[in-house]
Length: 179
Image (cartoon, rainbow, N blue to C red; front, side):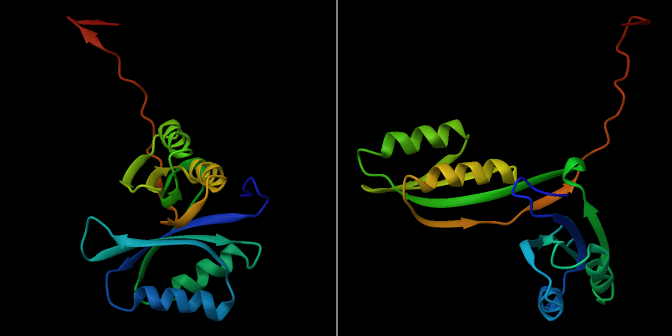
C-alpha cells in the first residue's frame, strides 16, 4: 500500500505474551535485520496475559513476507495479522505545545476546534493541545500547527484493529408486518 507520500507501508498487528523482554526482542529483530519501523505502539489487551504491538513497517526496506517470517520465529509471538488500511480502523494521538501569544491564540483555538481536538493546558504564551484521529488527519493538523510555532510535539504511533464486518440490516417488524 502506498501512502500519499509514495512510501509503501504495511501495518502489522502482533499479539504477544505480556512478558518482560518481548518488546526488546521484537525491536532487536528489526534492528539486526535492518528493517525500518515507521511507527510502533504497544499496550496490554483486554486479556492481561497478552499485549498488542502495532508496527507500521516500510516495505521498501525489506519484503513484508520476510518480516512476518522473522517475527513468527520469536517464542512469545502468538499471532501476526496484516491490517489493510482499507479494512482497518486506524488512530493516532498527537500532543503539542504551541507558541500562542495574544496575537496567535485565537488562530490556534480555531484550528483545534476545526479538527475536533482539545486544549489541555494554557499559559500566557503557550497552549498544549491534543488531537486523536486517523493518521492523515493528524498529519494535516500537525502541518497546519507547524506554521504557528510548535515548541514540543509527541505522537503516539498508529494503533489499528480490523474493521467490523457489516451485517445486513434486519427488517423492522411492526405488529407482524415487515417494513
